[in-house]
Every structure is written in C-alpha cells, then in structure tokens.
Length: 410
Image (cartoon, rainbow, N blue to C red; front, side, top):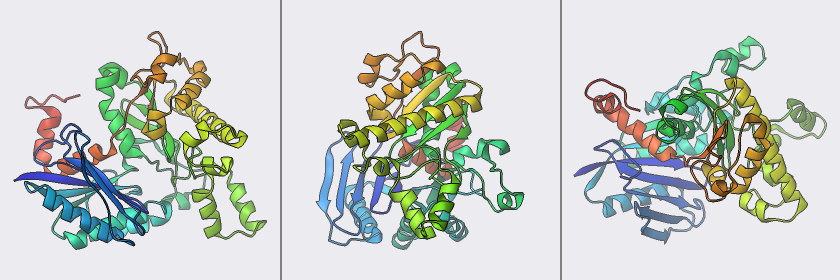
C-alpha cells in the first residue's frame, strides 16, 4: 500500500483539497487527485479530477452540509476510491502564524491555542483553517496534521522592514508587519533557478501575486526583503473586496463622525471595498475588464495604478529590479492587466513584448529588455505537500536537497 498526503485549504464556504504521494518527494506531475467541496452550509458541490484532468466525482451533497460533514464525505470518498493509498499526513494552509511560527509545524493542542489567538489578525481565513483542523482531528484523530503558514516566508525581513512607527510596547505585543501569500512566494522562489537561470534567480525579483487577494513581494537571493501586506491581509493593493492601503484617519472618521461600530468598519473594509466597492458592479476582474461601464474602468485603472506605485516601492526596497514575475489568478490569466502594469513600469527598464504577453508566454518582455517580466503559475498545494513530506521524512528530505555528495541542489 502506498502512502499519500492530503492538502487542505479551507475557506468560509469551501474546502479545496489535493492528494500527493507520500512515499516519495511530492511533485505536480505525481499528484493523485485534486478538487473541492464548494457551497458549504448550502448546496455543497463536491468535485475531483485526476492528474490528467479526468473527472472522478461530480455530485451535490445534502443541503446544509457543514465543514465537518463535507470533510467526512471527502475522506470516505478517498478511502473508497483509492484503495491502495493510505493517508499518512494532512497539510493545511494557515494564513497567520504570528511571530512564533517561522516554519511549518506539527499541530498539537498548544499550536491550535496559539493559532486561535491570532484569529483577529486574519478573520476571513484563520477561523476556517482552524475548523478544518478540528474536524479532521475528530474524524481521523491519529493522522498527523501539519500547519503551513502564509506569514512564514517573510520572517527573513529586517526589523526596519517590519516595524510600524508606534510605541515599542505595542511592537512587543506583536503589532508589526507580517506579510502574507508566503506559500505562493516560497514556491515561486523555489522554481526561479529553473526558469530565469541560476544567476538571475539570485537577483532582485519582484513577484506580483494578483488574485482575489493581491500583494507584491520584493525578493533578493530568493528570500523575502519586503512585501505590501502588513499586520493583516487588508494592507497594500486594492483587492477584490478588501480596501488595501488606507489612511488610518479614515477609520477614525467613520467611527467618530459616521457612528460606525468596529464590526461595521471591519465588514466595510474586508467585504464591501476593493474593486467591488469602487466599481459597484463586481469583484471579478474578468467582468470589470469586459465592461464598458465607466465605474468598472475606474476600478481597473485604480488597481493598475496602485500596483505601479507599490512596484516602485518594492524596487526601492531592493535597490533596483532585475525581474518582475506575475502569478495567481489575475497575474497568470489577465494579459491586459500585465500589459498595463509593464507599460507603466517602462521607467524600470521593462520592454514588453505584446505578442508574448497576449499568448501567455513564460517571458513577456523582449530579449533586450533591461528588466525581464515573467508569468509563472504558482502552486501553494505542492508547497504544502513538500513541507508535510519534509517533516515526516527529515533524513530523506536532507538527502534530496543536498544529494549524496552533500552538494546543494538548485
């Protein structure tokens, strides 16, 4: 019987999952299956496909299915469909690891308690990450569970890059810049040598993770130097529904002059803002790009403008820029957004190749461009599977990383 690792990414109304081999170093080519349970709390649509994209299951679960019930259905299906694969671990995407967790950890009661304390810092994600952990522990108590953090990759940043200009007593309580999307950035950093080349991969690279959540990360020698998100995932770029960077005085005004409660302000900033709030039409970039409504055009223009400003900030943090990488849903698929960003950043040495960009090529700048631009699909699930496998097989992981002769692999 072969070993398998389950990867879970739990949200408010969905559980996305994938299964990788656990008896060897996980690879995207070796994935066993992936899918989702979407619509939790209502009509749950349970789907899965194998590595070739063939549908394995496509069904609707009982009305009102909970997270725990959806997870139970998933486990029953896995056990029934993959008789020769035994789960040996589950890896979870956990958005916030705070100051304590700088690397993946095996989950126990103490870890769970600390992650629960961080819920106010990631209210859209952390509770659902924890609910999946609790549900799986109840359904499969002997299964090792591993937390992989979106904040961990950014712990290489210096004090000056993470500090707020607030009294030190607040910093001592953990009020600082953490940064997010770390699993995505870690994956991109890991594949840079094979795409840009070993030397260029060690250069000054800005990665634009553009999706429903969006941020930029300044990377040098494949480690995080600065990022646009901060204490929470509200900071930085405007997103699908989140406001991004905001003058704190606006929050004071809303509470003092408009009489809004903290809960109302939170809902406004997390759920009603971003390109949805600006456009009043949609939080989907595809819809906005296809619309002739002036409000949609303004929302897109603001999104692109803010990327340009933050790109300048990231380049400043690096002391220059050698490459720009687009990733995540918008970054990988919205050629128009890439075009506008690159054309606005011509001052940074970007010379866009319109044909390559429209075709979604890996490199989208002309060969002579002083700064290159790339499209690299991210793979957070694979990163989680790799972390889980490494924790379970530390000796094999060390050999895999360094080789039998001790030399470090790229």
